[in-house]
Length: 334
Image 1: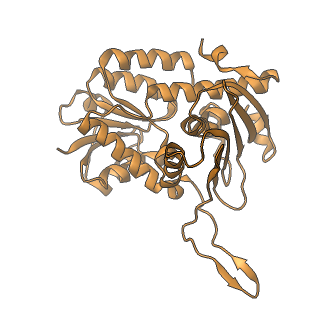
Image 2: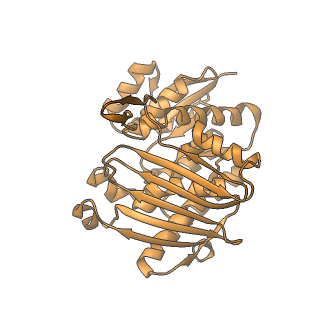
Image 3: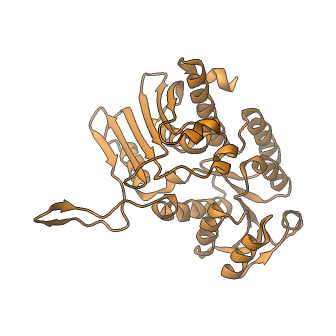
């Protein structure tokens, strides 16, 4: 069986998912919708799919699943529409910037029995996945401490920052999900610090560019997250999990993994320059997992609840910064 897809949103991340869908032998990209005609036309020409409106995609019978890559403020509405239309749904994070709106949206997903998968792609990266496999196999014993480093080469444009919901909901949310993924317990408290160190304009937009977060579980396990919007050396993505028997870690990845040794010393090629090249395999693997959900009836993972809990941690981090205190997650959720 081939799964017929529609792509909603033909921007930067839409292009990534279009490539992932069309490279999978069990999938076919049938249609694309975007408010900007040129963006939709580019995808349609490249992959030979139709350009349709969202209304047309919702009503048609030849679409099995949708991939939602539209602006964040449209995600919850589109999830509800396509849940009621009986389509399987893959949605980029976050579901919404409002926790209350996410809860309402997930009620519709539950009521309709829709299959919803949320795009936390790092779970599907071969390197991060291998860390999780090592933990599950017992190689490091009981997880005790987690350290996550995630630093971008540069800040996104001002227009993007203005509508993103802020660094915790836009950038750190991936790290919140990864912390939950490897800790094995839910964090119960969040303590965060945030500054503007790279560009004063970011402060004027009401956001931060440099943040540190400590998550603590009920048993006392810690996850420490370090984020920056400026890494002059490339896209910095590292993880270390320390346990009772040892540790497992991910090093930064490079397009070419070589080391040159000569009279000038040891040199290695630069890191990947951003997420679109660093996580190519992850995007393909998560779409493959989504297709398996549809074909095999598997429960989607990460699902809407994962999206909800990652957003709750982001909200707790922001409150911690604003109020200068450690915040309990149940303050946010209840």
